[in-house]
Length: 462
Image (cartoon, rainbow, N blue to C red; front, side, top):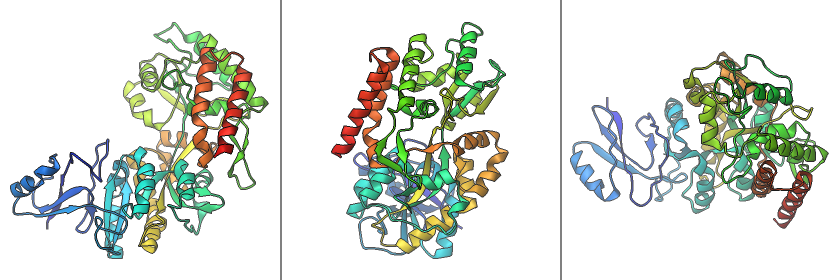
């Protein structure tokens, strides 16, 4: 029996399989990882980084094996003749590692070769948008749901049919839907929650004001410097994503929704009376030091794991750091500051089928029947720690108390808007929050109203 090895080529020019995170993919004959040289030989796995011009030297040094260089596009082994027995799938390193066995099963059961292209997750949607119309893109892609509006508008993804959408968490189906149609199979859900250092404060709090008061009472004791940590943006900006649960507790969502729960870009609700009250609170918390513009992302987590605050609003991406710190912690819903429930944005990752796929039926089967299975959703959860979107997989994941806690908070959250209008919201939102917090905005209600009018103008301008 031959083992499959990969000689990874780090090109000096371009590479179709780059990622900033480490990861590998176990495959089977016919199962290729694109942008890599795949070597059929015996022995231990080897990874060699070499510039493209050294490829021939590497091949000579490894004489005796069968050397294959695979570069991939949608239903196309690298820009050559169309090969309908090949399916190209773009994955991040985490998902590629988790899905190795499932992809091998898919290949065997459907007599098809799956070309896996590893991509850095934040770059996937942009690369997909650029490459799909050229025929160099994938048949199937993992992508964040908030890119869906642009993908649909650009005609790059196809709707799919889920026989049992109720098998998935409602917030997840909402996230992968656009204008009443479902476009993807959701697999992972992530959101922020409140993490409380139970060594510093063993008690939960019913309101955000109570939490702030408790935190202020602890400042100066046991190394505590901040009553609560909510990370700020760089360059004195606010961080609307992390502050959004507090904003929604004032009844000031970004957009209103229609009867089906879809966001309406013509119904910006941020500057209602609740929004103005939230802006006033930002000014108050900024003046009192509850919100600190210097606590950008890296500084925020360093401070929290260093015991400098009893509370932090953050997501599962920081959980390993918190565990390593060694203190007791609790993951909880963010207490309301404005009297209404706090709703964090919920981010959903899902699998989508390219409109340019020449193998659409097989791509749909891969997405709907395989990526929608409990086996896959559980494998992705175990690899990445994000709550599964499939209800049965989510229930099975309840044995992990951290995943259960984040999932419970997310179940009451709101999908991050995926409509194209959202792209013009973030900058003005962050600039205004930052100015209100540091006191440079003047009257907070007026600054908030001016922000909203500016955003409306940008939306209307397209």
